[in-house]
Amino acid sequence: MSNDRKTSRRSDAKRSMAVALLREPWVGPLGAVLFVYALFALLSPETFLGWINFTTMVRQTVVVGIAALGMTLIMVQGGIDLSVGSVVALTTVVVARALQGGVSVTAACLFGVATAAAAGLVNGALVAGLRITPFIVTLGSMSILRGLAKGLAHEQKIDAPEAGLDELMAMPPVDRAWQLLPVGVWLTLLLAVVAAVVLAYTRFGRHLVATGSNESTARLCGVDVPSVTVLVYVVGGLLAGVAGVMEFSYLTVGDPTDSIGLELAVIAAVVIGGGSLSGGQGSIPGTLLGALLMTFIAAGCTHVGLPNWVQEILTGLIIIVAVALDGLRRRGG
Image (cartoon, rainbow, N blue to C red; front, top):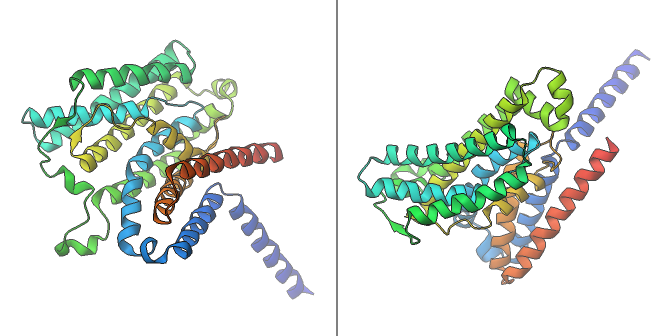
């Protein structure tokens, strides 16, 4: 009888672990990624399968992925940032201008990232200080920062010496084949690990979740909501700046018209990955999987000859389903 009880307890524990795993927000996106990859692999095995195509798709996910890490933290806090595309474009212009001026590659990247972080600081200060809705603040800054980028670039692309920055997104040479993937991809994964640790195991991460779940309760519990708000927008701006450096590496020019609509892809990645537009919930692994899913869909449609409008319809449907599932999960919880 004793053995039967132990067996029953172990069985119950396994079931509980399985249920807990299935409730993780990244499980759904992972299943979707695997399904989409398998689908296009069956439809177009000659071109879709293979290491070269896989690495190409992963490279194409870097900019959205890094920017989406910052957006995840912002949306967990209950905010949103519509200016991320403009920040990325402005960063490419600042980096190009700095390289044209003869500064070092490191200094040029630091200038670009610092500019992006400053934009995040302004966004956060306006949201926290004036208590203006994040949607309105960042909608305005989206236009302002885009205008600044165009003004700084004199409304044209800026050609600048690559100075080795292009290697960040290039496939490793033969003598570094052990690296497998470009530096930019490894940097994305490293930043994702850091963001996940911050969100799950730090005081700042707990304050983000508390503020996004219920701001009034968070204030009563002693959370300095204005400071948390400003800091998360700075972090989001900083990560958008890093994404901008990766974009410059990919384009090798400073382009003030680049990344128009990027904010929609970034927000979609967060939502598909289990993030909530209502705040208080988000998943770093889910976000990366959401970004990868959209890349797989776009690349797969291209490989099987489907037009761009089909890609957009499929992506839109996935976003709607993700938001609907989030609503069901919240009502069920």
